[in-house]
Amino acid sequence: EPEVTQTPSHQVTQMGQEVILRCVPISNHLYFYWYRQILGQKVEFLVSFYNNEISEKSEIFDDQFSVERPDGSNFTLKIRSTKLEDSAMYFCASSGDLAGQETQYFGPGTRLLVL
Amino acid sequence: SQKIEQNSEALNIQEGKTATLTCNYTNYSPAYLQWYRQDPGRGPVFLLLIRENEKEKRKERLKVTFDTTLKQSLFHITASQPADSATYLCALGRYGGATNKLIFGTGTLLAVQP
Image 1 (tube, rainbow over the protein chains, first blue to last red):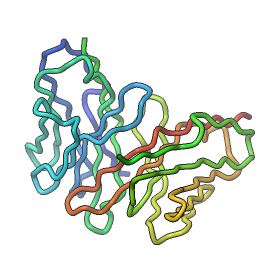
Image 2 (image 1 turned 90 degrees about the horizontal axis):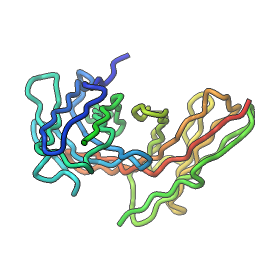
Image 3 (image 1 turned 90 degrees about the vertical axis):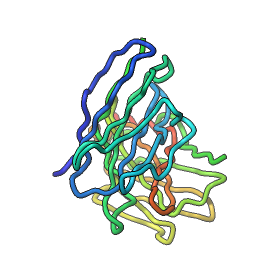
Image 4 (image 1 turned 135 degrees about the horizontal axis):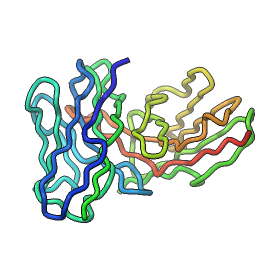
């Protein structure tokens, strides 16, 4: 069964450093998302991406964040200058074509720790 | 702003019983609602989707209802098993062009005792 994959599973970085989180969505999906979950809190929407551009972003997704789909398979989230409060689990998700765009399939997550 | 509440942070039941989880929302009109399962340190796993024009959906031992008047969804697991122990999340969505962002509740931790 197709699944969303994410690398790395864990990332430790120093405050102010740049990190890139990588995702490979399900191959025939058209919509891509990043969410985050701070320990003990709810899953929060960051950004959605469709047709090679951002379709919506939340207040959390400020100028320090960017997303890219550099080729036909990868989808990345870059945090330019990490802050302590960026420590969280980051989940990539994807959903299908117009017939099935509602259901989002999530990856296993990247646990980011900013020191 | 929109608010999604899942009743009780934790629910303990005996194996074989039916678990009923509640999701209430305010200041929002979702077009659909989804239930996910999340195990510790893992990503949410999709379980069921129900749209605003549907009253009930079933999948094996799972059943979900959606009442847009009460602004509430109920999620049932019948004949529960210890393996059903996990956190269950409800998530609301709307059709909006090229985005289908989901708004999640805080989740209910279900513990099924053998």
